[in-house]
Length: 326
Image (tube, rainbow, N blue to C red; front, side, top):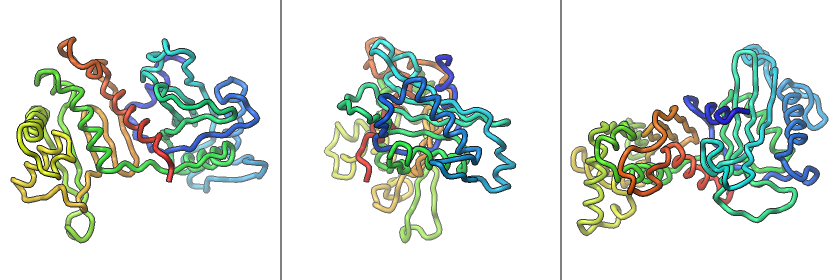
């Protein structure tokens, strides 16, 4: 497998996020050995083609879906395991490892990634593997078969990974702060504007479900600096202290210009687009192909600013996926 094969599959497609409890495999000592991967490739292919799952002959697709999707031609499970810490840059996402599942149909190739952070230390338990983040880009019917295969095969609990308004705001702030040490031109080159979609729960706005806020690239830097001044240069109230500088400034601007109180509990950020990625509250993520690998600027800036922004986003998702399942 070429170095960029799985990371290339991540770009310019919308992925659905799930969180997983530990995968159990008491018979196989490791999920990453070639023999085990080939066995699961074969069994999943049989399930997806409506052959056999757990000893029972099944047919997961209705006729219309089977015609549209077609017959699965190849199913590959590939290891993304890092053998040593010196390999942290091998996969393009430093510190990320796991399993890449590729499903080849006649007209489409679908992708699933089970990932974990190489940086987060966890106890080694024989017969158990922690891969808490699952990203899938495939039709719902195909994904349902995959989840139905993973759940009993590994005695794993899987749940959709919903993204709270607080999480998306925190992610945005972290990325903007990573770029902020640089001057406006380099900042604007990376950020390329911010789009926020606000959602309103009943009964706050019965006739208004969503509101889109577009912040041009030349204004993002100004809002960020203004927010920092509001937080650190003035006595901030309780509401502002819960926001990072950019969202603090946006909240203040919206309340002043439109009388909209974004601190209201029934107003949430349901979608976020910035710096070549899109996040949605229903557990969707889309990454654009990175144009540059690092942020341009002073070499003395924070080292985190020298990481590609999609790497910072992946770090946030991996941390979120590590949270205990409810």
